[in-house]
Image 1 (cartoon, rainbow, N blue to C red):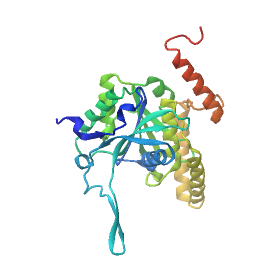
Image 2 (tube, one colour):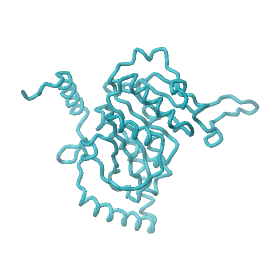
Image 3 (cartoon, rainbow, N blue to C red):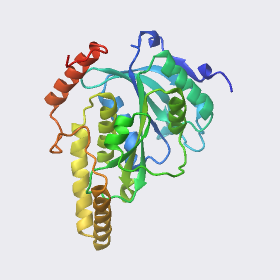
Image 4 (cartoon, rainbow, N blue to C red):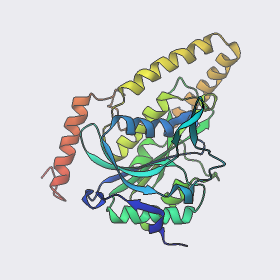
Length: 307
């Protein structure tokens, strides 16, 4: 295998990146049900302060004929070219906490070398933990909260959040391989697979992006602005509910899925770590206060905060 260092180029500011940050990964290209990963990537880059730390070599990793870039034609000339990219960014969340974001296209080629390159970056920046998101279509109703399957070695997240724990074979993506290698190394990692209603898999489903961000928050303590996504989600569901009301066949399908979902969840009662005992989401002030307590505890090292 060729040297993985040649697969990416670091920015001039790479040495100034704080060590010990969380790495969040979201790659597009395979089974992105509800456009969850695409929405998360675009939303974070559009709403949060960020700078490019490492840029991967697109010509080495992308099959252009399978995923052709966009070029713009203006009457009689080509006016713009938008190539696909795969970059590592230094980001800051809504409370200005820094973290790393790996996002862009999923590599078509050189998965082993790409994985080795990401492992090098994780080692270089002494990444504290790696979290990634993915979304697949499932026979579940849109009238119920989006469930997740959690993989990796963060058992506290698996026990608290994973609603479906199958034993099965699945088509792998590049981040599956990365998680597998991280697990071999004992590096803290968690993968969140969102279970999206199959009849909405080809739509841009805002609730999927919200659930993805909530999952990342649960794993990292990062806080993301989701007000616009939630508003878009309410509008989207209003339209879907209207279509269901006017279509007997679709209403029957949703009703059947609801019965199956509720029956399954009765035997798998999981409460999200983002909610209180009554199932309510905390306010932004409560989240900030809890985060400050968490950071204060971390600063004391291994001391017992109750001592």
